[in-house]
Image 1 (tube, helix red, strand yellow):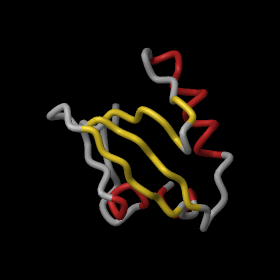
Image 2 (cartoon, rainbow, N blue to C red; image 1 turned 135 degrees about the vertical axis):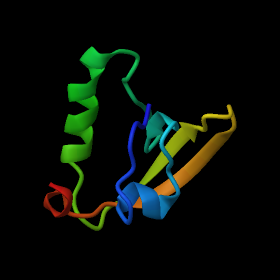
Image 3 (cartoon, rainbow, N blue to C red; image 1 turned 120 degrees about the horizontal axis):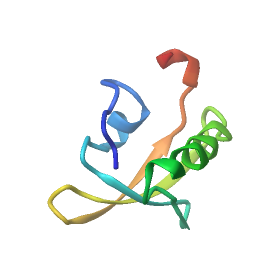
Image 4 (cartoon, one colour; image 1 turned 90 degrees about the vertical axis):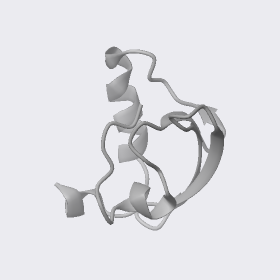
Length: 79
C-alpha cells in the first residue's frame, strides 16, 4: 500500500497516488501482504537504475486497476 507520494517524484510523475496498492513490477508480483515484506520490496526498488523504465500494475483505493510506467530517478534526491 502506498502511504505517501513525494510531490514531483518518480511516483507522482507516473500518476501513482497514496492509497494505491502495488500488485506487480514488470509483471513480477510484489510482496507486501505484511510489514515484514517491506525490506524485500525496498530492495527491488533499490536495484533499479536511474533512467530505467518499469511497468507497475496497481489497484486504486477505489478498487479500479491501473498500469503505470515509471522512469526511475536518483534516490538520493529524496533523502
